Amino acid sequence: MKLTHLDASGEANMVDVSGKDITSRTAIAEGCVVMLPETLALIRQGDAKKGDVLGTARLAGIMASKRTHELIPLCHPLLISKVKVDCALDDALPGVRVTAEVKVAGPTGVEMEALTAVSIACLTIYDMVKAADKGMRIESIRLRMKSGGRSGVYEAP
Image 1 (tube, rainbow, N blue to C red):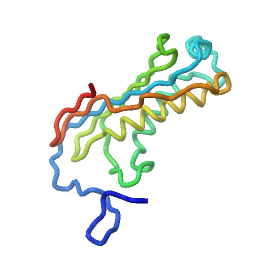
Image 2 (cartoon, one colour):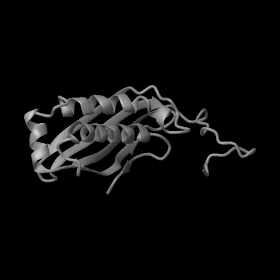
Image 3 (cartoon, rainbow, N blue to C red):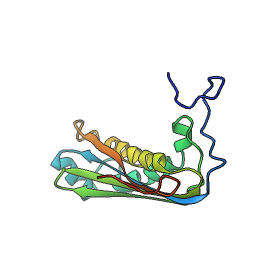
């Protein structure tokens, strides 16, 4: 495995953020789970055998964002100040659109935490209704916006 953050001895290390300013940082990520219209109806009606699909997915996304540093090598542990995960039913997909917003005041951004929240929320939706629809697809996970820090604001086109 090739790591990009190597010190002078060739060892992998976390990026040193000790010299960076503490600023307010926000990241918003999104993704979706595409499914059969019948599966979407099952979620909408609250008839999934495993229970409240959207509520469970929101909670899973929030919990995952707080553990990103345990999942992704060399990711800094952060004192996150806000995590909001929204799961919206979308008949046009058909499926569920997932959005996560994460905020922190710190020396490094929260893009990975927002992306992790969306990824785990999508996986949770899949897990909770996979018995009804094994052909579901998790798609289009991406960073939609980030602000704060030296690089400023990024907004996806």
